Amino acid sequence: MEVSGKVVVVTGGGNGIGAALARRFAAEGAAAVVVADLDTRAAGRVAAEVGGLAIETDVSTESDVVRLIETTQDRYGPIDLFCANAGIAFAGSEQSPDEDWDRMWRVNFFSHVYATRHLLPAWLSRGSGYFLATASAAGLLTNIGAAQYTVTKHAVVAFAEWLAITHGDAGIRVSCLCPQGVETRMLEESGPVANLLRATALTPEQVASVVVDGLARESFLILPHPEVGEYLANKVADPDRWLAGMRRLQQKINEATKMEE
Ligand SMILES: NC(=O)c1ccc[n+]([C@@H]2O[C@H](COP(=O)([O-])OP(=O)(O)OC[C@H]3O[C@@H](n4cnc5c(N)ncnc54)[C@H](O)[C@@H]3O)[C@@H](O)[C@H]2O)c1
Image (cartoon, rainbow, N blue to C red):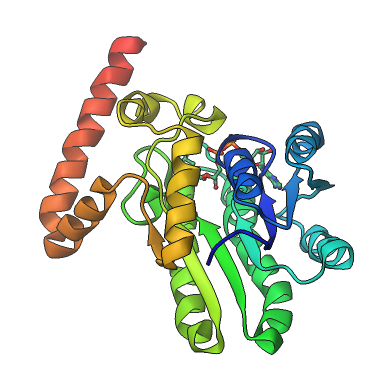
């Protein structure tokens, strides 16, 4: 899909990857760019830059997502591309309280269910619509030290695959963006893993450029870091070897953390 002339919504569009996507889509000639974010000031700034509309949205609340979709449609007509990009990350393990698991599920995963629940009826009757899910390399591999993030991002990938299989023949397109480190606030707040990811981190603008290419090709997996594809192939080819390698990485991070303390 070429973005030119399209009505586009970007959640989490106030900062980081979402802001870069909004700017790039506008530069590509999108007919309208709607910037949805909890952070209304940031969303307003980006919307003003791209001549778009900012809509305060908490993607973890279904009624907010419905309002986002309806407001966009009322103002600009049918939505062509919906980017479910908003997400949160924090450290956690099996010991984390249910509230942490619940919050991560709602923001990172149920937001995608809510969006597609209310986009698909119109898209299926039109026979077109494009859903871009921002997952993460953590959704294909793992994120050391962040159980909730890893599990919810795996769910994002699984749901995106399911959507592509179920609705692909009805004209619905789905892509799943799985970057490794990207230079945003999220990376800055990612603790010890950030030090490892920083070495190969991309700018949000570089990611946006890979996304535009991926959308043009209508590729399901959009991998701004091509090495993630190799890691995934290695994992599938020999899971025990992959796990052993990841344990070595975990050990390295544990040692680095101890030295910092
Ligand atoms: N930065 C990375 O290294 C990296 C790597 C892989 C995947 N990702 C994914 O990319 C996406 C964007 O992350 P980013 O790095 O740009 O982070 P960021 O923190 O810079 O931006 C995230 C944006 O989402 C918004 N947001 C958070 N919760 C929200 C909610 N409930 N409703 C609406 N908006 C909400 C924030 O206000 C913020 O503007 C996330 O889904 C993240 O998991 C990031």
